[in-house]
Length: 308
Image (cartoon, rainbow, N blue to C red; front, side):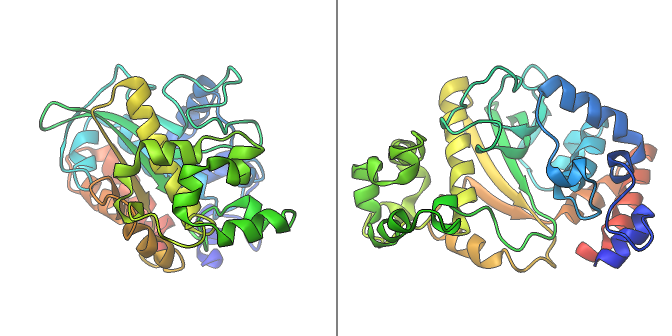
């Protein structure tokens, strides 16, 4: 896998590129850096120290060329058939990377879930504001995965520093966590709003409504998925979106994530949640009349072809 990416990015025998620019699709490199400055988000560690398998760079390379094109709606319809137009009045010309609220990310706010800081917080890799075929104002959040073996897990359970809290987390029922969020370390110590929001938006999680599940179901790979749905619903409430959605985009060849996705589908409202392959967007781009978009689609296919 890395051998192919090293060839595509011209790094020789190393997985490290000489600069972050080398990771970006050449026609969009300046756009990506300009967008980052406007929105005020951070480049991830493996973009700053540029790794050929950077998922954040791959996310930029997937969505930025599409959003620059006049055929963006035509391409996005391949995975969001309800879209009729992009709402350019929201976000940065209708879209954002590293989304955790509508406003630019530079005033020290703790965000919609009360968990945002320079070190942590829930965000979506890509966000789109659009109008659907019923005239609804919609927000679509996307988590991009490339070679990762798991979604972000609960740090309290998995960092080894909180054995008492971990034991409690594994023993509690969902009902007890919803009824008393302070039993969760994130609520009690960090003052995050995960469980308060879970109760508020319980209709997004029909699989939890019996509330008899033993142990926190979000201790492992579903943690990141859960928090992204909460983020979407909190954004809906604050900014007045009429419909919100959350998707994971990943290559089919990455099967390591499938179990967490399967478990999450048993809990979440599947009208909100979906999974798609980046190649779906790439093939839709190839079908347009936009020569620049076709050129990008060929580049993306060649660069990430082994990850289909």
